[in-house]
Image (cartoon, rainbow, N blue to C red; front, side, top):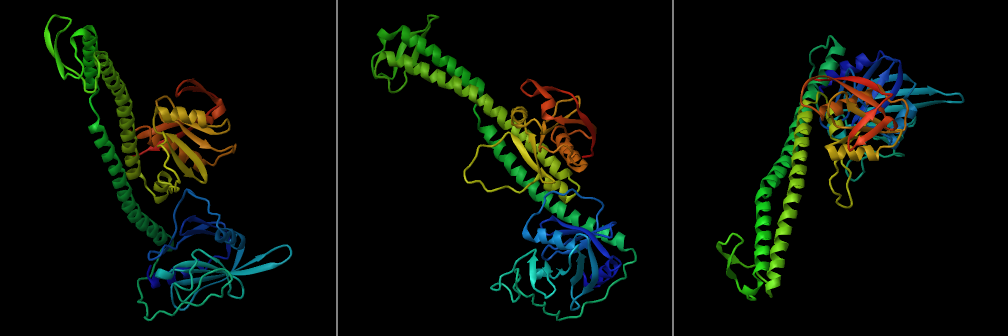
Length: 443
């Protein structure tokens, strides 16, 4: 963000008299609503800060750090006493006041869009730091940013910023700033995440290719059983510790039967043949399950990648890619995926097993979703709240559609409480007292 543009943006913002709401909508993004009508986004990403407006957003996460508590306490329903640029630099200071029943309070919000020093800092009337978006230790900077410390002013820029074009239509400029910036960020992150999914799929495809053939294993099992029966029928001809023996099979044809290693007696020869046959048969059965599981995982990842590349905003992408918590112990992979929307946990079945598991996990008051009139993944919103926001319901319904089909078009998604869903068999259900959402899938 150029200084000439920053000055014009602040000049535009000086029309506002009140702040009606303020909260973080991203790790580095503060949304401030002015005069009950306009919302401005202050993106304080280091080295890539910006001010912009956007039409709508899904609140992916509710921030509750001490900074967020104070931000809400001092900014919501506050009067703007003054708004000015400090030190001819990209530093905005808002002087704010609140009038309570017993006393009024005054604070300063300082937003610094200055490269490595980019920050949001709350100050009291004496210039003492109440809290900040980023704390900075005195060992790492000449300015210590911590609660209870007096804020040191930034050093003045060593150069004079160049002037630029006059911004005629500020709202349009701020909207375009958002579109340009988010499109670039979105494309970069989509590429990174899609590559990560590709690597997972490649590993699974290699595992799939290495699996033995079930038919060959079953043939081996049948051959071992036949050899075992033949050995038992000719125990008197088999000598201990011999490698092979000539016998006549049940069709009267002479065969050279190779005996299994480690057989100390003729009886053990038959036992080892049967053991080998049983092992091959069990392995063939396990391979079928393993092959089916790998195929389902690859199919899910292909849909996951398509949904990543189909997202239109960073918030949509963040819904698909919630931060992973560090696990003390390695847990077996789950058959369902976990998402967070507006602070609510949303579960999505990856396959039939996952759908069955969700139906068992869900509590009576949880919200259940399924596409109307066609096979689809099951979605559970884990909450006892009776009235869920339209944004939450639509976002969850969109996940249901995106992970159930690759077709584009309009889909109807039914939702109801889990207690209204009656399981018939496995993931097949009947339900009533439901509502329906229409979801448009464009990609």
